Length: 242
Image (cartoon, rainbow, N blue to C red; front, top):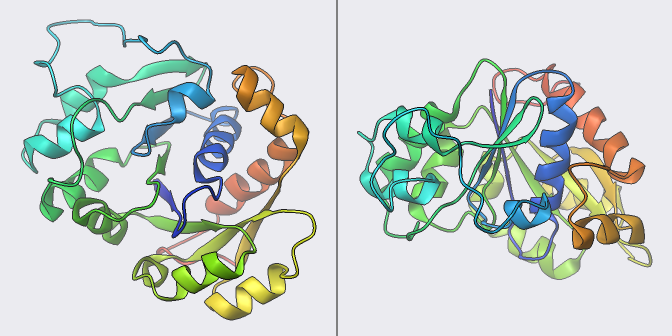
């Protein structure tokens, strides 16, 4: 199953939420975290020069990673993706963004990538802002798409005008203290259910900054992440289960 996360506004916490969901899922079964945003190695505390183990000849330079796969087009072999996986923790592998642009990839390549990322387990895709044509096409094909957003008036304005809202089955809310808007307001404005609520906490920021998120997932992240992963298994047809 391919679960895709995106946000209409940068700085919403999409990448940290994606990492938390992937880590929570890895405790239940084989999971992959696909990183189109480019920040997952840093969030997970992986070395900047980390490279996947090689069981055979590696793809040519520039073809390792999601960006290279998209640039190669819809006919790129899935073996390139398999060869790019970085081990994170038992049960979790990371598909890094890799070198090269994403914006020049054709929509057909994005749709083909969504198909290639489907797996007997769960693949969590961090799509970032999802503004490129190929990534938008990927959202169309993903099994389940969730928007990550903060209860911010400016973010909501962007969200209602963004075509990605139509592709989203639900919303993950990153809750900041002191905001005037709450989960009910967000659900009403976007006409989508809030399916997960993740708090902004100092201990989460410290875990990310120290690069220890993969080893010590803070309880404030672990609890909502496990709840969302459990609900994903009950979703069907791209619609959130009640």
